[in-house]
Image 1 (tube, helix red, strand yellow):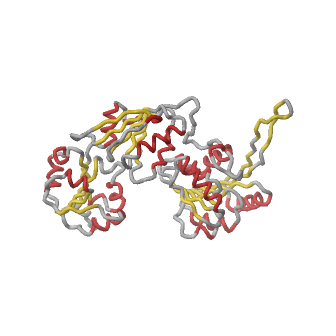
Image 2 (cartoon, rainbow, N blue to C red):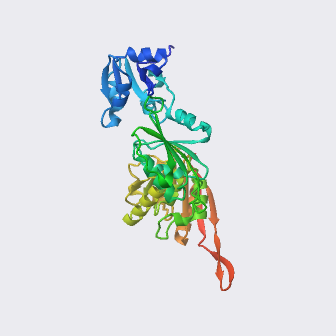
Image 3 (cartoon, rainbow, N blue to C red):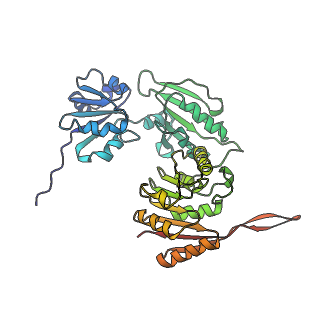
Length: 405
């Protein structure tokens, strides 16, 4: 039997820098010069100079890009991107939709590589982030003592916003450097510290931050178990120690999706998203006041992409994307379990906590029917007893967890 022949490449995705066509390898330059159709932003078309191809601007909305590209299949098509097209750039979007056998990528030196060289930082030792076209607040999760951050910004206002985030969290003495138009004739550098930042910078820039913590800085690690005081709550949240144990069983992983059923203040969903790059979460919560608290907590703790859904399970679960993990903070019924379990992806994790006798009975019955691990967790805190100190126990919690095999 003959193998089906792969499609010949018809699309070239070319990284271009501030030095334009002169900075391309000869073979890559020949590809651009021979193109019939060139896609790109206004800046990319200017960098490509007087190439005689038909120029096409980015579509609006941008999600129409793939359909637009494929309408030119059979012709010589080039997409221009800044720097490395597969590093926080359009190449990743193209690669998810068009088979690799049909695309040739031509990387250029990335903004991260240029910035690390300008700063003298080892690229392996920094966090590389983008807030370009995304909520700026998502960088908050990476503010840590001694961390070095390289950030692709949204525009000229972004460094000031990030300076404010740093200052509010006790990192106001952090040196900041804006690098603009790197590799071009108009390259510029702006240095300062977060608490005094007042530079007006070009819109197209990359920000370097060397995080320096004051003695009273907020310590907000990305491992689960944040202090309860960091969350706005009406008191019904999953508390710190139990939350850490719950996240350990949920197992946050890169790009994975969590359903947080009865999300309350959103503490479990937020810590899930902080614990793994690109992890997503959907919080299902019937009360508007608690959804508002969860949204505020997500913004303050660097997970602004938390999606909140009004309603109660199981009805509110209909139509949601399939999750990799599910957490139920209380009141798991057989009906909710069946709906959640059927939606859970293979190797998905389900964790449910119970504090009342009635909900404990439900977990015991589900454990008997489906297996998994059943544990009881007790936490006590030191508290004054007259002039002395004793242990004040919290309500014990039964936790059921299992993996879908």
